Each structure stands twice: as C-alpha cells, then as structure tokens.
Amino acid sequence: MRLVSFNTYRTLTLPGVTYVKPEHLFRQTDLVRAADAILFPASWQLNVLCYAWKKQIFPSPASYDLGFDKVEMTRSFNAIAEQHVPETLILPPVESSVERVLDELGLPVVVKEPRSSMGRGVSLIESPSALRSWTRNADVLYAQQYLAIDGDVRVVFVGDRVLSAYWRRGGDGFRHNLAQGAEAVFDNVPAAATQLVQRIAPQLGIDHAGFDVAMVDGHPYLIEFNVLFGNEALNGRGVRVEPAILDYLQRTLRPQDNPSLPLLPQAV
Image 1 (cartoon, one colour):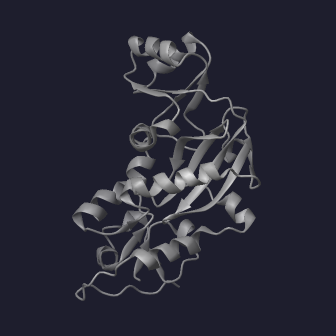
Image 2 (cartoon, one colour; image 1 turned 60 degrees about the horizontal axis):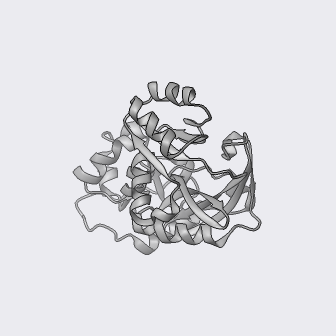
Image 3 (tube, one colour; image 1 turned 90 degrees about the horizontal axis):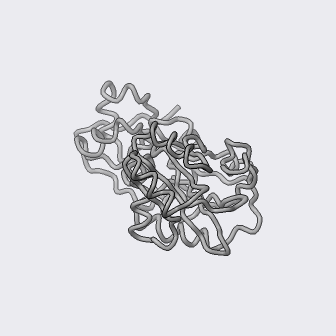
C-alpha cells in the first residue's frame, strides 16, 4: 500500500507511511496523487482530494461530513435510528423557536453549537431567560432533551467494527468528557451501547469515530460522535488504534493502477 498521512500524530506507528504537511498539499502533488489512500486529511483538503483527484481517504468522507456538524449528525441518526435519539429541535434562532423549545422540551434543556467538541459549546439551560440569551447569540437553535445521567459510554469504532468502549464517569456534573475531568471506566460496559454503534456506523459510512451513548433504563441514546477522538484512555488500557486502521486498510483498499505516477518513498 502507498499511504500518505497529513496527521503524523495519528499515524506515527503505521509502517511505510509518507507524511506531508497539510500546507504542502500542492507542493507534493505527485506524492499525494500516487498514494492508494490519504490518511487524516484536513477538512479544507477534502474537496480537492475526493472530487478533483478522486482519492480514497481515511477517515471516510461521511465521517467528516457528519462528524463536524451536529445538525447533520442528528438528522442522520434520526433517519435510521429515531428511537435511539433524544428528542431534538433544530430551529432558527428566533423568539417563536424559544417558545417551541419551552413547550415541547421544557427545562432544563441542553443546547449545543453545531460545530464543537470536547464538551465545548454545550450548555445546560435552566431558565427561559438563559435560553433567550443563548438564542440571541446563536446561528441556529439546537436544543435537545436533557437526560439525567451521571456518565455516558464512549464507543470507539475503527474501520468496520467496534474497537473498544468505556464509561466516562464524572466530569463537571453535566458534561462527561475526559477533557472536562471525567474518568474512563472500562468495566461493565453495556452491550446495548456497542451493538447500536456496530449497527449504525456502517449504515452511515463512518469508519473512524468515538460515539457518545447515553444509557437510560437500559436503553441506549446516540448523543454525538467525534471523528478525531482522544486516544489517551485507550492507550492507558493498552488498546492501540493504529493496528486496527492498518488491518482495515489492508482488507479494503484496492491499490490504484497508475504506473505513470511515482512510487512513494518509505517513511524514515
């Protein structure tokens, strides 16, 4: 396989990968176009790689397209697994939308910025005035049913299968991200959470993501997923993502037949 990576942190231990700085995309055109697959491109590179040069990329285009926008993510979840999505309203940021959220979801309610991660851009709203204040500064009003839980399940999906899963306990009392101080607990992870992700990720074409799943009375709810999820908890458990990526690529990639393009140099 001829592989080019634009993210050395996530592919450092993969054999035979050539690293190219993202800003050098057009300086290293021959190398990039000769590759069988491009690993972890920057989002701004996707249109050139996928549509202009017809490259195979990992993570998949669907992982990027859905993973960077909670609005599109939630709509896709609803389309294939509505019973596993907390009640959510996606509305224009106007007063009539505030009234609808109060009438249909009540308080407290969770509001989110469509493009954020690691618990940033997420707030628990407990009063009408706070909801109106949030709405005045929002481009879209994304409001979601509040689930009274003390942790959630992070399910790590790589390639075509669940690689690992763990509880995220604690945090700041509302957000359970490890970046917000939560603890990773690998014991007693419910099979319902991993089975749900194993079913919906391939349906959506997602091949690299950390899914957040809330468990309420044994029922799993999809909250969101992060394409560039943190590996610290997995590494501490001795679970490595890179071998799973390599295995998936070896099983699924078909090397392009283009003898006019040069072979890539081996990584040093």
